[in-house]
Amino acid sequence: MRILMKFRMDETFIPLDYHKMIISFIKKSISEYSDGKFFDEFYSEDISQNKRKNFSWSVRLISPEFHKNRIEVLDKSFDLTFVIADKMNMLILFNSFLSQKGKKFKISRDNSIRLEKISILEEKVVEGNVAQFILYSPLVLRDHNKDNNKDRYITVEDSDFIEALKINLSRSYPSFEDEIKDLKIDISKMKKQVVPLFGHMIEVSLGSFLVMANSKLLNVMLSNSIGSRKSAGFGVLSLSDSWEIRL
Image 1 (cartoon, rainbow, N blue to C red):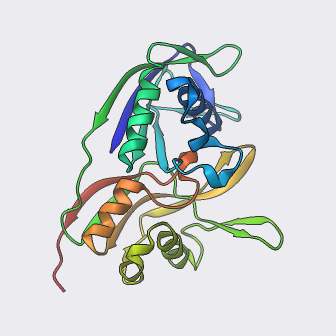
Image 2 (tube, rainbow, N blue to C red):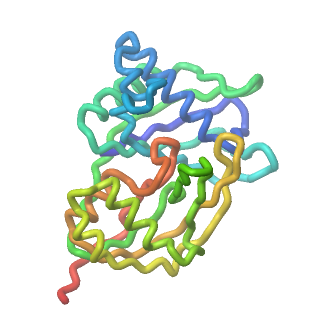
């Protein structure tokens, strides 16, 4: 299930690292909905209690101009798409965002954003065992080393990219472990990029890819998104096409 939100801005700029801005809006929305009774299920200080933090999102800007510390958006608008598989999460988040409609949310000393429209989009369905996906937000694959507490970000330029992607999918969707092992993927139209996140620059992958797998797995990937850091605005997929190939 997907929620589409359309925002207007007072000024023509948003931060280059807009993830913090969007997460702040999410937190404010949940904290003010139903007296904040669901907030700790999403953003508890004890991360093991964040049982509802299973969503992803992407931002769409029209003709953006990128500068050192900001993004210029001349038409003063942007779209925010949320991807949520769980029905209860969908209800909580939709109502949380709806309660913010028309209210100004300050993002800097000189700029505010305002939610103008919110709607539910019909989810597309993969029909067949081959899907062409477009990454609507960058794909993050993070390998955390517990020994030195450092992160390695794996991109399409790394030789172990497909292996890392399969490991990530298996952790996210363990009931499809066998199907994930047999998954075949064409990443020739993907590329590496570096993006800001919470004061750091991280390596991500962008573009589109073809994947052959069990149709149920493909639909799970589409409706749940893929990769690491999904709730921070990564891993959203859009279905471009799908078909059946008989082997």
